[in-house]
Amino acid sequence: MIEAKSIGKFFSVVNEKGMAEGLTAVLNVSLTIPDGKIVSLLGPSGCGKSTFLEILGGLQAPTDGTIHIDGKLVLEPLPATRKEQIAYRRRYRFISPLANGVFRDRPKHDIAMIFQDYAVFPWMTAVQNVEFALKLRNAGRGAERLQRAALTEKAHAYLRKAGLGGFANKYPSQLSGGMRQRLALARALSVEPKIILMDEPFAAVDALTREKLQDELLRLWAETAAGGSPITIVLVTHDVHEAVYLSDEIIVFSPSPGTIRNRIPVEIKRPRARTDPALIEIEERVFALFQYDINQEAWYSI
Image 1 (cartoon, one colour):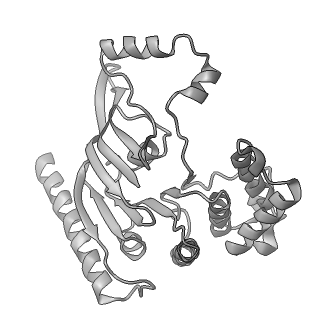
Image 2 (image 1 turned 120 degrees about the vertical axis):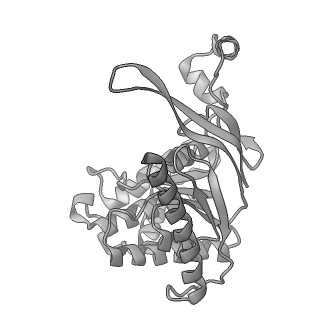
């Protein structure tokens, strides 16, 4: 279970006059995501969705609040006051940077992340990309480490699951955009995480490929559910249709600073039809929320 409590994120930025000023990206976001669910974070550009996702994954530390996964702290908040900074330095002053990576609270959970720009290594073949992720994950597992042959076979197995069985020895430059995103998905699934965080993973492909990748994601997610260990998926998207089609729940973020505008459950059994009137009704509700926010923003800007 993912538990976010009063998450805030504040950035110091320099304006066009060269003066420092503050930007609050996320403000007081509290959220619980049960195991095995697909949850979408939906909202306008700049509302803090991606920042919040990175805080969930431990890629950024929150300014305020905490994230716990299965009761374990992901990252402790950054020190905000002088008193907190002094205490922070005292706590770690005798620890080397390497030791800090071992002893300090840091991401130590079964999490994989998929980005919009694929984030695959262009100098590695498809199978080498998946093998690399497996090597990293198995480096610290001692007796559970996979032998070389087993590791390679596992990489091939996940490429086949993602529909890339015949492209194992191709480089990313030889794959289409949809195939590269399938490769990113295969690499994420290969480490058998409990949680997958996805930041606009299908935004860079055409509409037809996007729908195919959505169906592929649901198929692979259903396989983990059938095995008794469903993966939790948290997805950042701007696409209302995608959010409604994929999700068990949609978290609608307000315009900046990002707060939770609304939580909309999607209690429709899978497999779902994209033309289901019940799905379309939920889409219309979400569009109505967006339209209200746009009109309010326009009114204030006059």
